[in-house]
Amino acid sequence: MNLPQHGSNPQYVYQEMGIEKPDQIMDLSANINPLGPPKHLEQNWMSFFQKINDYPDPYSLSLKTMISEKNEINMDSVLIGNGGAELISLVGRLLLEKNVLITEPGFSEYEKACQANDCRIYYHYLKEPHWELHIHEIKEKLEAIDAVFLCNPTNPTGVFYSYDTIVQLLEECKKANALLIVDEAFYDFVEEYTPIAALINDYKNLVILRSMTKMFAIPGLRLGYMMAHPSVVEEISVYQSHWNVNALAMTAGELCLQDESFVHRTVQYIKKERTRLFAFFDKESFVYSPSKVNFYLLKETKKDYMGELFAYLLKKGIVPRHTCNFPGIEGKWLRFAIKSIEENNQLMEALKEWKQQLP
Image (cartoon, rainbow, N blue to C red):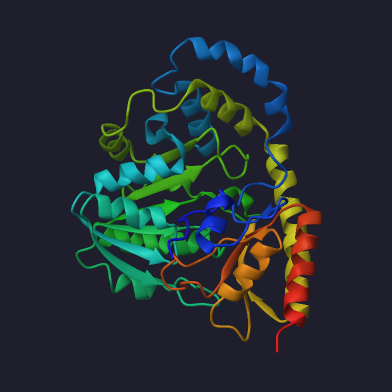
C-alpha cells in the first residue's frame, strides 16, 4: 500500500485505502491552526492585489528585518524560504555526500532531502511512549557525523525538548564539528518555549528552520525561514532560486509576525482542548504521546497496529494521519490534529463507539 507521505489531501488516502469517501469529512491529518488565519490578514487581503503586477523583492529585506529584530540576530543570519520544505531541500544540498544523523520518528522530508543528495544516513531512534532525548546516546553516534537533524517539537509526537537539552546537544555537535539542524516548525505552539535563536550568535554549527504556515494557517502561501550563522546562510542561498517567495506571501508574513495576540490566543485554546482530549483518553484507556503542541499520537492499549481504527474512522468521515512512513512507529500509532471543539467532540464520540465494539 502506497499511502500519501503527508497529511491533508484526504482524497488520496481514501483512494489508496479502497474506501468510498463520504460526502462530509473531517480532516484531522493536517496539523494547521484550527482558528484559521489571523482576521486582519483577510481584512487586508484586497490591498495585496496591487503587488501582483511587479516582481517581489528577491532579498525579502522587509520580512528579514522584522525576523532579525524579533529574534535579536543579524539580518544576514536570516534566509526566507518557500515553506519549510524548500529550506530542508536547500540544507540537503549543503550536505551533499556527507554523513547525516536523523532522530526518528521525525519529518520524512529530512531523509528524502538527504537521499536526493547522496548522503550517508544514520538514525537515532527515540523510544516510545515518552520519546525522551538522551544526549549521551546521541553523543556516542557523532563520530564522523557531519550534521544532526532534530525536530523540536517533534513531528509526529509533539514532544518538546527544553532549552538546556538543546544547548547540551549543540555543545556535543560542536565538539564533533557537526551541524545541528533544529526544525522548529511548531515552536510557537509551545507555551513554555524558551527562544534558542540568539544561540546562533555563539554557535556557528546551529541551523534553525521555521515554518509560518502552521501557526498562521497559511499553507497555501508557502512561507518559512532559516536562521543560521551568516556564512551558512550565504553558502545555502547560492542554491536558492531567484524570486523563490512571492510578494503576497512576504506581505502576509509581515502582518502575521505583528499579531502576537493571535499566537497567544491560539496557544491558550490548544492547551485547553489538549487537556480535555487527554482526560478523555485517560478515561477510555487510550495511550497518547505527551504532546505540547496542536497534535498528538494515539493508540489503543491492546492493539499493536492501528490499521483497523484508521479504516473505521475513515468510513465515518474522520481522517487521521497514518504513521506508516515514520521510522520507529510504523503504523502503531495514529496522529491527530487538535481542531474545533465540535470536531474534537466528534472524534471522541467515534473513538468511544469503536472501543465499545472491541471484543
